[in-house]
Image (cartoon, rainbow over all chains, first blue to last red; front, side, top):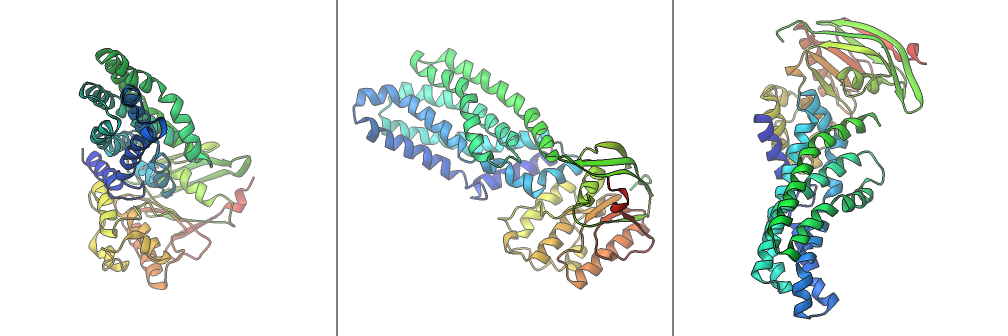
Length: 219
Length: 195
């Protein structure tokens, strides 16, 4: 618990303190900028906006989750933080788990808050907003888990950052299909599926990430 | 340090990429003993320390160590953007102590607590790295070029700390081509084991 608390405190400090990962404000601003630009791109037709708006929020959320990808693990890996934690008996799996949690906290809840003004910008009604919010709540943990896993897998690769974004997008498709799909069907089942996929991704991330960090040491 | 520390390496070989760096490396260190690993750049000094620390798998052979390990290498594993106090507070929470004010003062870091780590000089960063590796809580110290960038006073302090801990049963392995002065230091030239 002591180690867990120390790790979480540090990771959150980095995520929110405007530290190396650019802070939690950046993804939110990015998200809002996309929501703001979309009406300019497709025109101010309220019917079209209301229909496509929910999906736009999802795509914007996905892109915002990718933003800090190259700063998620690489700086700590290069500075030897994971090595020193390993020597002190802190498993890579634990460090990755905490990182997933901190990453989610740094973009999940802020995006859910930002979705409210974004819904206003896109002219979404309250029912759609509710579905979007529930979907984001169910889906963003999965996006955080994919993000950290990909960041771990691309450690030590020269083109890691660009490759990371490219790898994340297809993996995020299931979350997106059911999360945004829930908008068309109006709720329940889609969100439950999104939550199930998220849960699976969150469960895999620590083991995949931990193994990837250990493998990256050998390279 | 309840139990006696021991470090045994048997027939170690190290491969990096396609190159076999060394092979047939065998040594045994008992408590209070120290070994300096020498050899030109690229002979595998750092890799050897990482193998002993369990961070790198040897191509063959095995390492047995009784007791936990502290590793100081060329990196500084603390957050760059926060003050030194905050950066070290994280590690002291993980370690539950060890960062004594005495050691901090002796390393000349007592007045730098509110300076962001990224503003520290090369020598100061090396001192912080020594503090962070927190060898005082472990029976086996692995020091990779511990004197690089340190001024005479700090270098003297590091060597005195190693000697003092050896008197209490610590095993030290130092990878360096600079002279390192502690009593009873054994030497091992990696060139003798080059593949």
